[in-house]
Image (cartoon, rainbow, N blue to C red; front, side, top):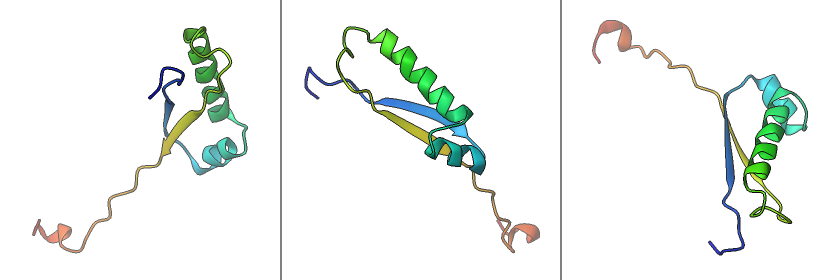
Length: 78
């Protein structure tokens, strides 16, 4: 990393519904507002460092998969 670069901004939005993820991809909705709010906060914290630079957020959204019950779980084999 050179002195001229700003470290990446990683934003973890946690688990979201499909609808909210779709809205985020289209640049609208509550999740987009949250990303914009975090970027603005980072911009004010790094005022001199980030001046004239483009801040690129890395947004992490996930959905937890359900555990599938296998046939053996019901019989106590595992």
